[in-house]
Image (cartoon, rainbow, N blue to C red; front, side, top):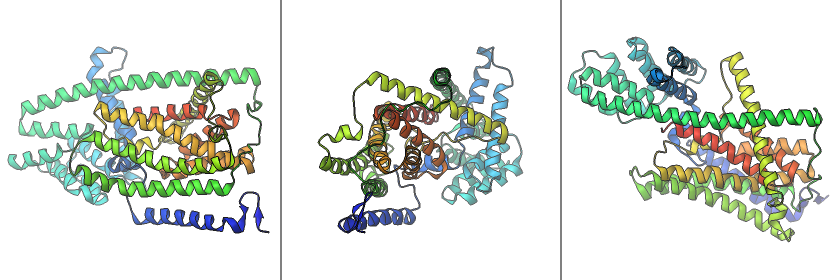
Length: 479
Protein backbone atom coordinates (compact mmCIF):
# COMPACT_ATOMS: atom_id res chain seq x y z
CA UNK A 1 0.00 0.00 0.00
CA UNK A 2 1.52 3.32 -1.08
CA UNK A 3 -0.94 5.58 0.79
CA UNK A 4 -1.29 6.17 4.52
CA UNK A 5 -3.76 8.63 6.10
CA UNK A 6 -1.13 10.07 8.43
CA UNK A 7 1.57 10.37 5.77
CA UNK A 8 -0.18 10.72 2.42
CA UNK A 9 1.26 9.12 -0.70
CA UNK A 10 4.30 7.37 0.70
CA UNK A 11 6.24 7.28 -2.57
CA UNK A 12 5.73 10.98 -3.18
CA UNK A 13 6.72 11.80 0.41
CA UNK A 14 10.00 9.87 0.35
CA UNK A 15 12.12 12.98 -0.44
CA UNK A 16 10.52 14.83 2.48
CA UNK A 17 11.09 11.86 4.76
CA UNK A 18 14.76 11.83 3.74
CA UNK A 19 15.12 15.57 4.45
CA UNK A 20 13.42 15.22 7.85
CA UNK A 21 15.65 12.30 8.79
CA UNK A 22 18.75 14.24 7.67
CA UNK A 23 17.79 17.29 9.76
CA UNK A 24 17.16 15.19 12.87
CA UNK A 25 20.39 13.23 12.37
CA UNK A 26 22.36 16.46 11.90
CA UNK A 27 20.84 17.98 15.05
CA UNK A 28 21.63 14.89 17.14
CA UNK A 29 25.18 14.77 15.73
CA UNK A 30 25.82 18.43 16.54
CA UNK A 31 24.49 17.96 20.06
CA UNK A 32 26.73 14.95 20.64
CA UNK A 33 29.80 16.69 19.23
CA UNK A 34 29.33 19.88 21.23
CA UNK A 35 29.31 19.42 24.99
CA UNK A 36 27.87 22.88 25.66
CA UNK A 37 24.24 23.82 25.97
CA UNK A 38 23.01 24.38 22.42
CA UNK A 39 19.59 25.98 22.92
CA UNK A 40 19.67 29.67 23.87
CA UNK A 41 22.74 29.17 26.05
CA UNK A 42 23.92 31.06 29.06
CA UNK A 43 26.58 28.55 30.01
CA UNK A 44 27.38 29.72 33.51
CA UNK A 45 23.75 29.77 34.62
CA UNK A 46 22.88 26.55 32.85
CA UNK A 47 25.65 24.81 34.81
CA UNK A 48 24.32 26.46 37.97
CA UNK A 49 20.79 25.20 37.30
CA UNK A 50 22.03 21.67 36.58
CA UNK A 51 24.02 21.70 39.81
CA UNK A 52 20.75 22.43 41.60
CA UNK A 53 21.96 25.05 44.08
CA UNK A 54 19.59 27.88 43.19
CA UNK A 55 17.04 26.85 45.80
CA UNK A 56 19.73 26.82 48.49
CA UNK A 57 21.20 30.14 47.33
CA UNK A 58 17.81 31.84 47.57
CA UNK A 59 17.18 30.27 50.97
CA UNK A 60 20.56 31.46 52.27
CA UNK A 61 19.96 34.98 50.97
CA UNK A 62 16.50 35.06 52.52
CA UNK A 63 17.90 33.99 55.90
CA UNK A 64 20.65 36.60 55.71
CA UNK A 65 18.20 39.33 54.67
CA UNK A 66 15.81 38.44 57.51
CA UNK A 67 18.64 38.69 60.03
CA UNK A 68 19.52 42.14 58.72
CA UNK A 69 15.98 43.48 59.18
CA UNK A 70 14.98 41.35 62.17
CA UNK A 71 14.92 44.34 64.49
CA UNK A 72 12.54 46.18 62.17
CA UNK A 73 10.17 43.21 61.66
CA UNK A 74 8.97 42.08 65.11
CA UNK A 75 6.74 39.33 63.72
CA UNK A 76 9.78 37.36 62.53
CA UNK A 77 11.22 34.94 65.09
CA UNK A 78 14.78 35.58 66.24
CA UNK A 79 16.12 32.29 64.90
CA UNK A 80 14.28 32.33 61.55
CA UNK A 81 17.29 33.61 59.64
CA UNK A 82 19.62 31.05 61.20
CA UNK A 83 17.21 28.20 60.46
CA UNK A 84 16.93 29.24 56.83
CA UNK A 85 20.71 29.36 56.45
CA UNK A 86 21.07 25.94 58.06
CA UNK A 87 18.44 24.61 55.68
CA UNK A 88 20.50 25.98 52.77
CA UNK A 89 23.61 24.26 54.15
CA UNK A 90 21.67 21.00 54.38
CA UNK A 91 20.66 21.31 50.71
CA UNK A 92 24.27 21.93 49.66
CA UNK A 93 25.37 18.92 51.68
CA UNK A 94 22.78 16.70 49.97
CA UNK A 95 23.93 17.94 46.55
CA UNK A 96 27.55 17.26 47.46
CA UNK A 97 26.90 13.78 48.83
CA UNK A 98 24.62 12.73 45.96
CA UNK A 99 25.60 10.32 43.23
CA UNK A 100 26.35 13.29 40.98
CA UNK A 101 28.09 15.75 43.32
CA UNK A 102 27.85 19.42 42.50
CA UNK A 103 31.01 21.60 42.43
CA UNK A 104 28.84 24.67 43.06
CA UNK A 105 27.46 23.12 46.25
CA UNK A 106 30.93 21.90 47.28
CA UNK A 107 32.65 25.29 47.18
CA UNK A 108 29.73 26.94 48.96
CA UNK A 109 30.08 24.38 51.73
CA UNK A 110 33.81 25.08 51.76
CA UNK A 111 33.16 28.76 52.45
CA UNK A 112 30.63 27.93 55.18
CA UNK A 113 32.98 25.44 56.85
CA UNK A 114 35.95 27.78 56.55
CA UNK A 115 33.96 30.72 57.93
CA UNK A 116 33.00 28.59 60.92
CA UNK A 117 36.57 27.45 61.54
CA UNK A 118 36.43 23.90 60.17
CA UNK A 119 39.55 24.20 58.03
CA UNK A 120 39.96 20.52 57.17
CA UNK A 121 36.36 20.17 56.05
CA UNK A 122 36.71 23.35 54.00
CA UNK A 123 39.84 22.00 52.31
CA UNK A 124 38.01 18.78 51.40
CA UNK A 125 35.17 20.74 49.81
CA UNK A 126 37.40 23.06 47.78
CA UNK A 127 39.48 20.11 46.59
CA UNK A 128 36.31 18.26 45.57
CA UNK A 129 35.01 21.30 43.67
CA UNK A 130 38.34 21.65 41.82
CA UNK A 131 38.30 17.97 40.83
CA UNK A 132 34.74 18.27 39.50
CA UNK A 133 35.21 21.59 37.70
CA UNK A 134 38.75 21.90 36.39
CA UNK A 135 37.94 25.04 34.41
CA UNK A 136 37.58 27.03 37.68
CA UNK A 137 40.17 25.11 39.69
CA UNK A 138 42.35 28.22 40.16
CA UNK A 139 39.47 30.04 41.83
CA UNK A 140 38.73 27.10 44.14
CA UNK A 141 42.42 26.91 45.11
CA UNK A 142 42.38 30.63 45.90
CA UNK A 143 39.53 30.03 48.34
CA UNK A 144 41.33 27.00 49.75
CA UNK A 145 44.45 29.02 50.56
CA UNK A 146 42.39 31.82 52.10
CA UNK A 147 40.77 29.43 54.56
CA UNK A 148 43.54 26.90 55.20
CA UNK A 149 46.69 29.03 55.44
CA UNK A 150 46.58 31.09 58.63
CA UNK A 151 50.15 32.31 58.00
CA UNK A 152 49.63 33.48 54.43
CA UNK A 153 51.56 36.76 53.81
CA UNK A 154 49.42 39.92 53.45
CA UNK A 155 50.58 40.57 49.88
CA UNK A 156 49.60 37.06 48.83
CA UNK A 157 46.31 37.30 50.72
CA UNK A 158 45.50 40.54 48.86
CA UNK A 159 46.11 38.75 45.56
CA UNK A 160 43.79 35.93 46.62
CA UNK A 161 41.20 38.48 47.75
CA UNK A 162 41.25 40.12 44.31
CA UNK A 163 40.72 36.69 42.74
CA UNK A 164 37.77 35.99 45.05
CA UNK A 165 36.26 39.40 44.26
CA UNK A 166 36.02 38.50 40.56
CA UNK A 167 32.86 36.51 41.33
CA UNK A 168 29.51 37.53 42.78
CA UNK A 169 27.11 35.81 45.11
CA UNK A 170 26.05 35.57 48.76
CA UNK A 171 28.85 33.14 49.69
CA UNK A 172 31.42 35.18 47.77
CA UNK A 173 30.47 38.12 50.02
CA UNK A 174 31.05 35.93 53.07
CA UNK A 175 34.49 34.95 51.78
CA UNK A 176 35.35 38.58 50.97
CA UNK A 177 34.30 39.70 54.44
CA UNK A 178 36.63 37.08 55.93
CA UNK A 179 39.47 38.25 53.67
CA UNK A 180 39.01 41.92 54.55
CA UNK A 181 38.83 41.06 58.26
CA UNK A 182 42.13 39.21 58.08
CA UNK A 183 43.69 42.12 56.20
CA UNK A 184 42.18 44.56 58.72
CA UNK A 185 40.86 46.59 55.77
CA UNK A 186 38.05 48.40 57.58
CA UNK A 187 37.19 50.66 54.64
CA UNK A 188 36.69 47.75 52.25
CA UNK A 189 34.80 45.84 54.93
CA UNK A 190 32.44 48.78 55.54
CA UNK A 191 31.83 49.19 51.79
CA UNK A 192 31.11 45.47 51.46
CA UNK A 193 28.72 45.56 54.42
CA UNK A 194 26.83 48.53 52.96
CA UNK A 195 26.52 46.70 49.65
CA UNK A 196 25.28 43.55 51.36
CA UNK A 197 22.71 45.57 53.30
CA UNK A 198 21.44 47.29 50.16
CA UNK A 199 21.22 44.00 48.25
CA UNK A 200 19.41 42.35 51.16
CA UNK A 201 16.73 45.04 51.14
CA UNK A 202 16.26 44.77 47.36
CA UNK A 203 16.11 41.00 47.65
CA UNK A 204 13.40 41.17 50.31
CA UNK A 205 11.41 43.54 48.11
CA UNK A 206 11.68 41.10 45.21
CA UNK A 207 10.69 38.16 47.40
CA UNK A 208 7.63 40.04 48.65
CA UNK A 209 6.55 40.93 45.09
CA UNK A 210 7.00 37.33 43.95
CA UNK A 211 5.15 36.02 47.01
CA UNK A 212 2.27 38.44 46.44
CA UNK A 213 1.88 37.37 42.80
CA UNK A 214 2.15 33.70 43.72
CA UNK A 215 -0.41 34.11 46.48
CA UNK A 216 -2.89 35.76 44.10
CA UNK A 217 -2.47 32.93 41.60
CA UNK A 218 -2.78 30.20 44.25
CA UNK A 219 -5.92 31.79 45.72
CA UNK A 220 -7.34 32.03 42.19
CA UNK A 221 -6.48 28.38 41.68
CA UNK A 222 -8.17 27.29 44.89
CA UNK A 223 -11.29 29.32 44.09
CA UNK A 224 -11.38 27.86 40.57
CA UNK A 225 -11.10 24.31 41.89
CA UNK A 226 -13.87 24.89 44.44
CA UNK A 227 -16.15 26.46 41.83
CA UNK A 228 -15.58 23.60 39.39
CA UNK A 229 -16.33 21.01 42.08
CA UNK A 230 -19.48 22.80 43.19
CA UNK A 231 -20.76 23.35 39.65
CA UNK A 232 -19.87 20.06 38.04
CA UNK A 233 -18.76 17.71 40.79
CA UNK A 234 -15.95 15.45 39.71
CA UNK A 235 -17.27 14.86 36.18
CA UNK A 236 -15.21 15.89 33.17
CA UNK A 237 -16.62 19.11 31.68
CA UNK A 238 -17.90 19.17 28.12
CA UNK A 239 -15.25 20.57 25.74
CA UNK A 240 -15.87 24.09 24.49
CA UNK A 241 -14.71 23.03 21.01
CA UNK A 242 -16.11 20.05 19.16
CA UNK A 243 -13.54 17.32 18.43
CA UNK A 244 -11.96 15.99 16.35
CA UNK A 245 -9.64 18.69 15.00
CA UNK A 246 -9.90 18.35 11.23
CA UNK A 247 -6.78 20.31 10.32
CA UNK A 248 -5.48 19.93 6.76
CA UNK A 249 -1.97 18.70 7.66
CA UNK A 250 -0.65 15.29 8.59
CA UNK A 251 1.80 13.72 11.02
CA UNK A 252 4.57 13.98 8.47
CA UNK A 253 4.08 17.76 8.48
CA UNK A 254 4.36 17.73 12.27
CA UNK A 255 7.61 15.75 12.06
CA UNK A 256 8.93 18.24 9.52
CA UNK A 257 8.23 21.21 11.80
CA UNK A 258 9.90 19.51 14.79
CA UNK A 259 12.95 18.62 12.68
CA UNK A 260 13.29 22.17 11.33
CA UNK A 261 12.91 23.70 14.81
CA UNK A 262 15.40 21.35 16.46
CA UNK A 263 18.02 21.77 13.73
CA UNK A 264 17.62 25.57 13.73
CA UNK A 265 17.94 25.63 17.55
CA UNK A 266 21.10 23.56 17.56
CA UNK A 267 22.71 25.43 14.67
CA UNK A 268 21.77 28.79 16.17
CA UNK A 269 23.11 27.72 19.54
CA UNK A 270 26.47 26.94 17.95
CA UNK A 271 26.70 30.03 15.75
CA UNK A 272 25.49 32.63 18.28
CA UNK A 273 28.40 32.27 20.77
CA UNK A 274 30.91 32.63 17.94
CA UNK A 275 29.03 35.65 16.61
CA UNK A 276 28.93 37.19 20.09
CA UNK A 277 32.65 36.66 20.52
CA UNK A 278 33.42 38.24 17.14
CA UNK A 279 31.05 41.16 17.71
CA UNK A 280 31.81 41.97 21.36
CA UNK A 281 35.10 40.25 22.16
CA UNK A 282 35.74 40.38 25.90
CA UNK A 283 33.35 43.28 26.41
CA UNK A 284 31.12 43.12 29.47
CA UNK A 285 28.31 44.93 27.65
CA UNK A 286 25.20 42.95 28.53
CA UNK A 287 22.48 44.67 26.49
CA UNK A 288 23.99 43.90 23.05
CA UNK A 289 24.44 40.27 24.07
CA UNK A 290 20.83 40.12 25.22
CA UNK A 291 19.77 41.61 21.89
CA UNK A 292 21.80 38.98 20.05
CA UNK A 293 20.14 36.27 22.10
CA UNK A 294 16.70 37.68 21.29
CA UNK A 295 17.65 37.88 17.61
CA UNK A 296 18.75 34.24 17.72
CA UNK A 297 15.38 33.21 19.14
CA UNK A 298 13.48 35.31 16.58
CA UNK A 299 15.42 33.74 13.70
CA UNK A 300 14.93 30.18 14.99
CA UNK A 301 11.22 30.70 15.66
CA UNK A 302 10.78 32.67 12.45
CA UNK A 303 12.24 29.91 10.28
CA UNK A 304 9.96 27.33 11.90
CA UNK A 305 6.89 29.54 11.71
CA UNK A 306 7.67 30.31 8.09
CA UNK A 307 7.73 26.62 7.19
CA UNK A 308 4.48 26.08 9.11
CA UNK A 309 2.74 29.04 7.48
CA UNK A 310 3.69 27.91 3.99
CA UNK A 311 2.38 24.39 4.65
CA UNK A 312 -0.91 25.61 6.12
CA UNK A 313 -1.42 28.25 3.44
CA UNK A 314 -1.16 25.58 0.74
CA UNK A 315 -4.19 23.84 2.22
CA UNK A 316 -6.27 26.52 3.93
CA UNK A 317 -7.61 29.90 2.86
CA UNK A 318 -7.44 31.11 6.48
CA UNK A 319 -4.09 29.79 7.80
CA UNK A 320 -4.01 31.79 11.05
CA UNK A 321 -7.57 30.87 11.96
CA UNK A 322 -6.83 27.24 11.15
CA UNK A 323 -3.84 27.39 13.52
CA UNK A 324 -6.07 28.67 16.33
CA UNK A 325 -5.26 32.39 16.19
CA UNK A 326 -8.73 33.70 17.00
CA UNK A 327 -9.96 36.85 18.73
CA UNK A 328 -13.55 35.99 19.65
CA UNK A 329 -14.50 36.09 23.35
CA UNK A 330 -11.10 37.58 24.19
CA UNK A 331 -11.76 38.37 27.85
CA UNK A 332 -13.30 34.97 28.48
CA UNK A 333 -10.30 33.26 26.88
CA UNK A 334 -7.89 35.37 28.94
CA UNK A 335 -9.78 34.39 32.10
CA UNK A 336 -9.59 30.72 31.10
CA UNK A 337 -5.81 31.03 30.66
CA UNK A 338 -5.33 32.70 34.05
CA UNK A 339 -7.61 30.23 35.83
CA UNK A 340 -6.02 27.24 34.11
CA UNK A 341 -2.50 28.23 35.08
CA UNK A 342 -3.62 29.11 38.61
CA UNK A 343 -5.01 25.60 39.07
CA UNK A 344 -1.80 24.13 37.68
CA UNK A 345 0.39 26.24 39.98
CA UNK A 346 -1.75 25.38 43.02
CA UNK A 347 -1.43 21.68 42.25
CA UNK A 348 2.33 21.97 41.72
CA UNK A 349 2.84 23.86 44.98
CA UNK A 350 0.80 21.24 46.86
CA UNK A 351 2.73 18.34 45.28
CA UNK A 352 6.08 20.04 45.90
CA UNK A 353 5.13 20.60 49.55
CA UNK A 354 4.19 16.94 49.99
CA UNK A 355 7.37 15.73 48.31
CA UNK A 356 9.45 18.13 50.38
CA UNK A 357 7.82 16.92 53.60
CA UNK A 358 8.24 13.24 52.74
CA UNK A 359 11.59 13.16 50.96
CA UNK A 360 13.29 16.45 51.76
CA UNK A 361 13.36 17.50 48.12
CA UNK A 362 11.19 19.34 45.68
CA UNK A 363 10.02 19.62 42.11
CA UNK A 364 12.05 21.88 39.89
CA UNK A 365 9.68 24.59 38.73
CA UNK A 366 12.07 25.45 35.92
CA UNK A 367 11.83 26.33 32.29
CA UNK A 368 14.05 27.58 29.54
CA UNK A 369 14.14 30.99 31.22
CA UNK A 370 16.48 29.48 33.79
CA UNK A 371 19.12 29.02 31.12
CA UNK A 372 18.40 32.28 29.31
CA UNK A 373 18.48 34.77 32.17
CA UNK A 374 21.91 35.01 33.69
CA UNK A 375 23.02 37.80 35.97
CA UNK A 376 20.78 40.37 34.30
CA UNK A 377 21.26 43.70 36.02
CA UNK A 378 20.60 46.66 33.71
CA UNK A 379 16.97 47.72 33.07
CA UNK A 380 17.53 47.39 29.33
CA UNK A 381 18.73 43.80 29.65
CA UNK A 382 15.83 42.87 31.91
CA UNK A 383 13.35 44.47 29.48
CA UNK A 384 14.79 42.44 26.59
CA UNK A 385 14.52 39.21 28.56
CA UNK A 386 10.96 40.07 29.60
CA UNK A 387 9.85 40.62 26.00
CA UNK A 388 11.68 37.48 24.87
CA UNK A 389 10.51 35.12 27.62
CA UNK A 390 7.05 36.47 28.45
CA UNK A 391 5.82 37.76 25.08
CA UNK A 392 7.67 36.33 22.08
CA UNK A 393 8.19 32.80 23.41
CA UNK A 394 4.54 32.21 24.42
CA UNK A 395 3.23 33.48 21.07
CA UNK A 396 5.70 31.56 18.90
CA UNK A 397 5.68 28.34 20.89
CA UNK A 398 1.90 28.19 21.18
CA UNK A 399 1.51 28.53 17.41
CA UNK A 400 4.16 25.88 16.81
CA UNK A 401 3.40 23.33 19.51
CA UNK A 402 -0.33 23.74 20.13
CA UNK A 403 -1.66 25.21 16.90
CA UNK A 404 0.41 23.07 14.54
CA UNK A 405 1.96 20.10 16.37
CA UNK A 406 -0.96 19.32 18.68
CA UNK A 407 -3.48 20.08 15.92
CA UNK A 408 -1.76 17.57 13.65
CA UNK A 409 -1.59 14.93 16.37
CA UNK A 410 -5.22 15.50 17.31
CA UNK A 411 -6.36 14.75 13.77
CA UNK A 412 -5.24 11.12 14.15
CA UNK A 413 -5.17 10.52 17.92
CA UNK A 414 -7.56 10.81 20.82
CA UNK A 415 -7.33 13.88 23.02
CA UNK A 416 -5.52 11.96 25.77
CA UNK A 417 -2.98 10.47 23.38
CA UNK A 418 -2.41 13.77 21.61
CA UNK A 419 -1.92 15.64 24.91
CA UNK A 420 0.63 13.12 26.19
CA UNK A 421 2.60 13.00 22.94
CA UNK A 422 2.36 16.75 22.38
CA UNK A 423 3.59 17.45 25.92
CA UNK A 424 6.50 15.02 25.50
CA UNK A 425 7.56 16.67 22.22
CA UNK A 426 7.32 20.11 23.82
CA UNK A 427 9.53 19.06 26.72
CA UNK A 428 11.98 17.16 24.53
CA UNK A 429 12.66 20.09 22.21
CA UNK A 430 13.63 22.23 25.22
CA UNK A 431 16.70 19.99 25.69
CA UNK A 432 16.51 20.24 29.47
CA UNK A 433 16.50 16.77 30.98
CA UNK A 434 16.48 18.07 34.57
CA UNK A 435 13.19 19.90 34.04
CA UNK A 436 11.65 17.50 31.50
CA UNK A 437 8.79 16.45 33.80
CA UNK A 438 7.76 19.98 34.73
CA UNK A 439 7.97 21.21 31.13
CA UNK A 440 5.91 18.21 30.00
CA UNK A 441 3.27 18.99 32.63
CA UNK A 442 3.16 22.60 31.45
CA UNK A 443 2.83 21.33 27.89
CA UNK A 444 -0.04 19.05 28.90
CA UNK A 445 -1.87 21.99 30.50
CA UNK A 446 -1.42 24.11 27.38
CA UNK A 447 -2.65 21.28 25.14
CA UNK A 448 -5.69 20.85 27.39
CA UNK A 449 -6.49 24.56 27.19
CA UNK A 450 -6.30 24.41 23.41
CA UNK A 451 -8.43 21.27 23.35
CA UNK A 452 -11.08 22.98 25.44
CA UNK A 453 -11.21 26.33 23.67
CA UNK A 454 -9.78 25.73 20.19
CA UNK A 455 -7.98 29.04 20.65
CA UNK A 456 -4.29 29.68 21.33
CA UNK A 457 -4.96 32.74 23.49
CA UNK A 458 -5.52 30.89 26.83
CA UNK A 459 -2.32 28.94 26.29
CA UNK A 460 -0.39 32.11 25.49
CA UNK A 461 -1.65 33.70 28.70
CA UNK A 462 -0.79 30.65 30.83
CA UNK A 463 2.57 30.24 29.12
CA UNK A 464 3.44 33.89 29.68
CA UNK A 465 2.43 33.72 33.35
CA UNK A 466 4.62 30.68 33.95
CA UNK A 467 7.63 32.17 32.20
CA UNK A 468 7.07 35.43 34.06
CA UNK A 469 7.18 33.70 37.44
CA UNK A 470 10.35 31.81 36.50
CA UNK A 471 11.87 35.05 35.19
CA UNK A 472 11.17 36.74 38.52
CA UNK A 473 12.89 33.90 40.38
CA UNK A 474 15.91 34.16 38.10
CA UNK A 475 16.13 37.93 38.54
CA UNK A 476 16.18 37.50 42.31
CA UNK A 477 19.72 36.22 41.80
CA UNK A 478 20.74 39.66 40.54
CA UNK A 479 19.05 41.84 43.18
